Amino acid sequence: MSTSKFARDMIGEVGSGADRIAATLSALDDAALRAPSALPGWSRGHVATHIARNADSLCNLLEWARTGEEIPQYPSVERRNADIEAGAGRGGDELAEDVRAGAARFEQLARDLPEDAWDRTVRAMASYAHPAWYTILRRWHEVEAHHVDLDAGYGPDDWPEPYVDWAARSTLTDLAALPRERMLGLAGHRIPATDLGASVVLGEPNGAEASGTGRALLGWLSGRSDGSGVTVRPAGAPPEPPPWPHAPAGFPDA
Picture 1: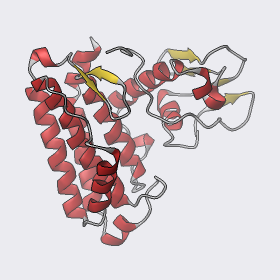
Picture 2: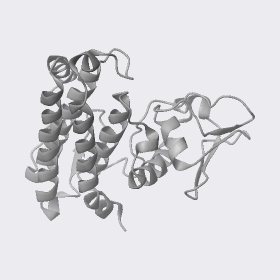
Picture 3: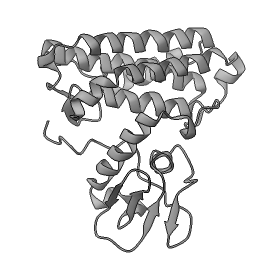
Picture 4: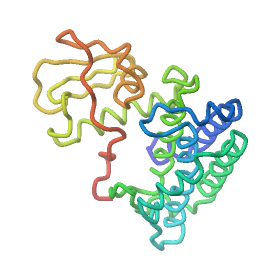
């Protein structure tokens, strides 16, 4: 199956992930929503608002692909941050409805995107270019990783298998394509996913290895776990991975 077809087939999975976030938010009281999330400096309300506004921002990229007229993901970093701050103090039901509404708009735009638009090039706020279909997979990362960041009972063990299978493989591929200086303490490591038949060596091998299931590796490499389930050689704690997600390696000149 081509990656573009896989992305389109996963539109419903991405929507289901947003539904799970909305259910989590609806169960939180105001005090819990104002409490710190797993992201430094952000409350759970900040994370929830970011999830909703991210859907809007990726709708902009789908509109770019549909019309052929460039629409930036966000008007500016300052506007992005201001919108998150403005929405962070809302109640659980309002936050949940915002997440649902943004997810519904994104899903509808994705399902309605004309066939000739799926391979059109758009550009992330982080400046890398990618085909429009990759927007679906970017949204999948946002939904699953930030649900964990709410720190409200959903963790890497709860990620759906289709997400783990794709995200672990793509993370290894994208990590291996980073310049050596951006690999930080992982430079030289071999990283095999023991249940996926996938393995990468990060630059010139130095004999070090960090192995585990795809789920354990993804939790660690995405910064959503402390490396539980990852076996390191030589023995010790898993090194801190570089910031995630990485720019996709498959289409650097899209």
